[in-house]
Length: 348
Image (cartoon, rainbow, N blue to C red; front, side):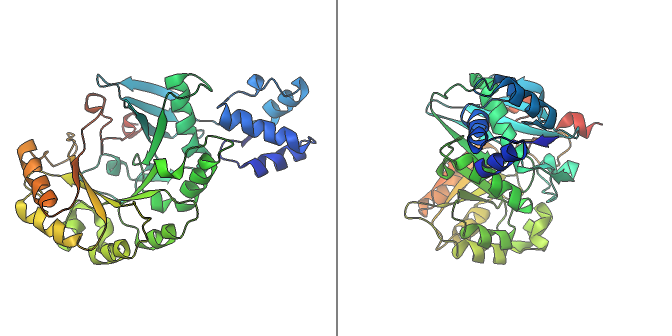
């Protein structure tokens, strides 16, 4: 059985031709899957019953299903999703007044091994396909608003769930291109942010993409030795190499590079750390998201007190570095930054 979610319109036209159908049938299937977010061929009432039967026999739209939804008091929802091979991944929905944000995964687990992140405790099981990546968005929108219903406002996507985006580069970019199509999901790349821990060669490649979302760098340290310890990827792509790539990264007129900095009590949150961060970002049109660490029993760190985070922020803003404190969301359901771990799988 072939999964159709993740296929382009041209690929679905070709698929329809293999079934002996005209090109317009492929376009209709495309519209039903993406513009109407239909996950069942029998809903595609514009198609003849014999064609729907052929589709049910030869294909599926997606094999991703909801295993469980966890609801937070702040409105956040965490989705434990089962993929076609039985593996599990997680996505998070965060409602806001003027826009919603969906945090999606690109790998089952993660290979990077950041010591302050729960996902790292799993290791990496496998990459997700473009269709599996897109399935998170379609399933979440359908569960929140109803299948095919218009969203009341814009939807932002952040590749900040499970996995390192640039270690699954081709599938991530394919998913972004498909989702950007105005005839389908129509999610503008300007509403998408891709996060990386610092896979330097892919940063250069990403800079040259025609369809290019925003880029966020997971930094969390200001010196080589400490970053080697906190984020082992630094041993392969050093902080110096990473910052060189950031300085050479082409930005649009109003665009900034985002740097994510997880605040770990008495580890990377001192005044001197803040001053080093200012020096590190010198010459880069940047903004910094300060992320209070979200503790878990399996992790060895504590969250920086809010007073310390505010003092750290002031040092940055006094030097004209825009810095924002990210409000934790979904902590009561383990949906906050760094907490995604598909716990049922981790316990298996």
